[in-house]
Length: 158
Image (cartoon, rainbow, N blue to C red; front, side):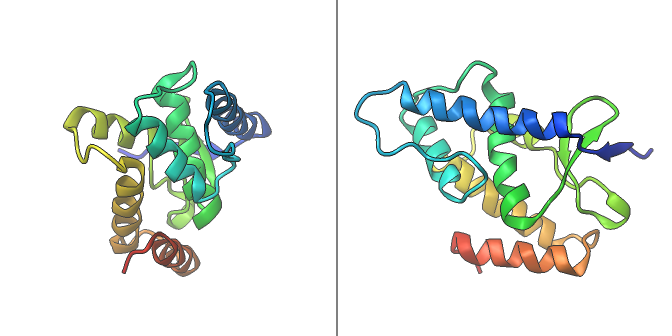
């Protein structure tokens, strides 16, 4: 059974940007915090998400769904994985052969929360894991695989 996806619309991308803005406001709601991360898909967003999680500072309204968009946007920006909208209404990351979706960020974060994988730096750990899995898959075009290898190197992976 195949899944059907469509390219993300301007409204979908605005939803991703709104998640980043919500995290910026959330970060700024605390006193004595380091400078506010951009939450625009930069690698520092992973560190910021891990910090919020480790310090148990919560998430903005929207919880795990917003966190999935903010985390997924790092993969979108850093590896060039395009956002796609599933028929079910969920935002996934595409990039597979023939436009195939390759990752549902929300599901990955739910899996983490249910399984209780590493207690700290879980966004970094999860990013490493996802990048490795995608590189090992044979559904990606060469250019995307190369971008993922670049992200892997930037994260400190092999």
